[in-house]
Structure formats: C-alpha cells, structure tokens
Image (tube, rainbow, N blue to C red; front, side, top):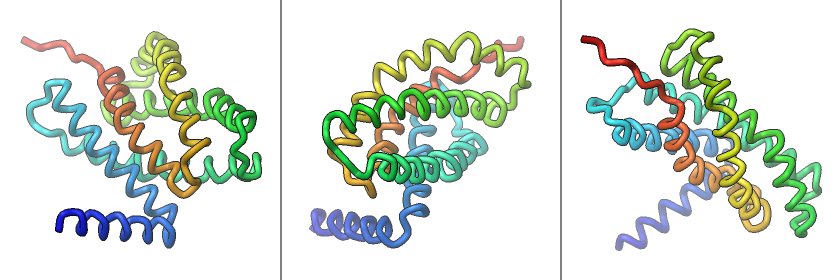
Length: 186
C-alpha cells in the first residue's frame, strides 16, 4: 500500500517535470531550500522558526536556484551536444566549477547577508572578504564529485532535481557558515 502511494507520487512528479519542467524544478528547489533552512535554524539553536527567513529562502530556491539550474544544464547540453564521454564530462565539470560554483556561492553570501539578515553592505562585503575564499575552496572539494555524477549518469530532466537534493545539504552548510553571530545584548 505505502509503495503504491510512493509510486503514484513519483509518477505524478515525473509527469509534472515533463509537462512543466521549469516550474517543477523551481518549486522543487524552493521546497528543498525551505526544508534545509528549517534544519539550519534548528542546528544553529534558533528556538522559534523564523518565518520571514524561511520564506526568503523559498524565494531564493524558486526564483534563482531552480530556474538558473534549469537553463544552465540545458545550455551545457547544447554546448556539448549531450555527450557523456569522459573527456566531455570532465569539461562540463571544470566549466561548472570555474563559473557557476563561484557565482552561486557569492550570490548566496550576498543574498543571505543583505536580504535575509538585513545587514549593511559594508558588513556583508567584509564577511565575504574573510569567508568567501575558504568557502569556495570547500565547495571545490565537494561539488566536482557530484558534478561528475550529474553529468555522467543523471538524465537532463533530473539534473536540477538531483543537484537540488545535494544542495539541500550544501545549503545547510552555507546557512551555518554564512550566518552572523549576533552579540548578546545585556
């Protein structure tokens, strides 16, 4: 019975992904961003769920991560004509890591600091100067492996979904890394 419900849910999801790929990927990225933020808030000791922050994370997933990933993977497949040989996959991973990875991490840090935390640009810029280099180096130790798996084994229509699942964990890491610890006021 449970397996039947799961199969129907998966079939329904795949149908939506086929009929409305951009919308489905955007919603998936938004939902996973929300779940990741809930986990991040709990792990960082926030007692009461911050709804504004949660909604801003959903907006980031739906408005940026899902659509950007959708168009980026389509572009890569066009550039490399859908090839999956070892040399082409390596080129895709290198291109992704030298362009998209640094941009996404920088945009996240700016969005988190300025929009989610509401910090002044000077504070956010200072945090980026100190934290971004090590964050990007960490990213380059994690994401190339998943990039390889994505480009080698995951069908085009499922790449954003797969990377959104990995980004769920990465997002928790980024949230915990990007948040500003506020001094306790007496």
